[in-house]
Amino acid sequence: MTWAEMQPLLEQGTVDTLYMVLWATFVTVLGGLPLGILLVLTDKGGLLQNRPVNKVVGAIVNIGRSMPFIILLIALIPFTTFVVGTFIGPTAMIVPLAIGAIPFFARLVETAIREVDHGLVEAVQAMGGGIPTIVRKVLLPQALPSLVSAVTTTVIVLIGYSAMAGAVGGEGLGSKAVTYGYQRFDTTFMLVTVVVLVVIVTVVQLIGDGVVRLLARRGRTA
Image 1: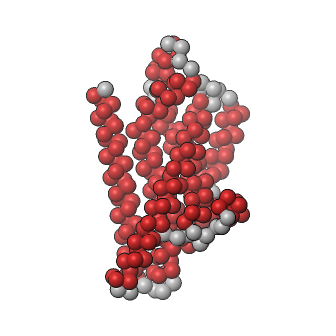
Image 2: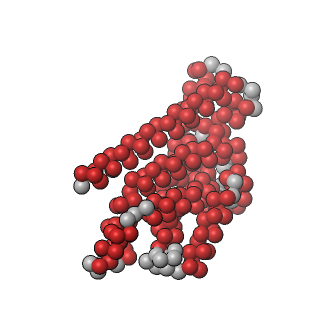
Image 3: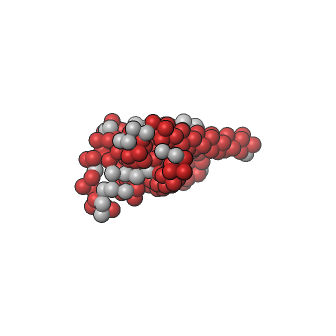
């Protein structure tokens, strides 16, 4: 396959991959952030200590994290069809991508929140601050660099998931690699696809690291 033939396929695959990953990241953050905060608040010694709730939520998160994505993708076909109307295409893939990433991101959020100095929480409590105030004014701002790092890691994981989704009716670079690289024995196209994926991951990591360093500098000068 010539470069002129590869270019439109790679461009469309890149657009589809970014579309799936960005929307799946948005849904993942919406679902995983409150879940991770809930895991911290309901744990032993937490502001909303509730061991039964913590155990149930933790078990759900652990099950979600342990499920191989390709199996989850297939298992969610009926649900994806119910939500989107089809299980094929980039829009349909957003559903399993987000569901697969939410437990992973929730654990990263939990770890980030636990790193916050408990003395700050006690200080806000002493001034009469309630739980919503503590979450908004202390936990999230103090954990922000770690949360940005967690989002970066999740985006990279989602890029890998999206490549796998290409083998089961999804679009994106993974689909192009399987269809035009693997099935047609075009090693060159396969290698170029891998290079594009590596470039995307590298750019995401550089952006994430840059934002974390910026937030860290602002925190030191605040």
